Amino acid sequence: METTKPESWNTPSQPRQENKKVLAGIMGIVFGYLGIHKFILGYTQEGIIQIVISIVTCGAGSIIGFIEGIIYLTKSDEDFYQTYQVGKKGWF
Image 1 (tube, rainbow, N blue to C red):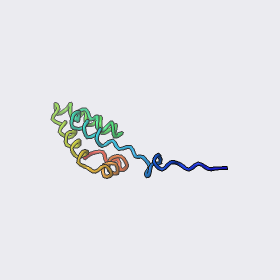
Image 2: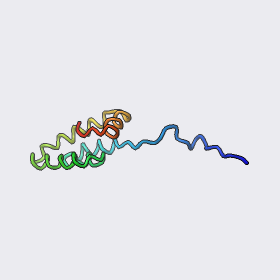
Image 3: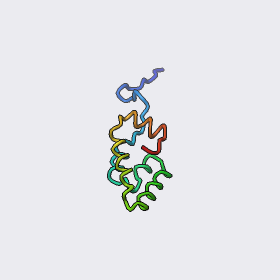
Image 4: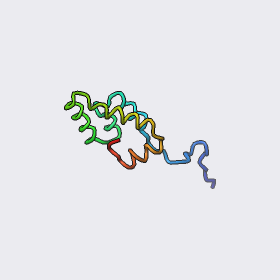
């Protein structure tokens, strides 16, 4: 009886982790006033707060989403994953 060995080219060396850095960063820059980047990361409460801030400030609060989008894109993939997806840091 022969056992089959997994093919090395088809076996991931590390478990695949879902990193939403680029998507959340671009959505933060483009649609920061809607808090879409928060919803993408699973922060429903913070997303709703972002929408309310934008409505109350007549859009001036959208600078928060813009800044967060830039912060997301400038972090390394691993740092972003650990901070915002594992550590669940909601703001900045």
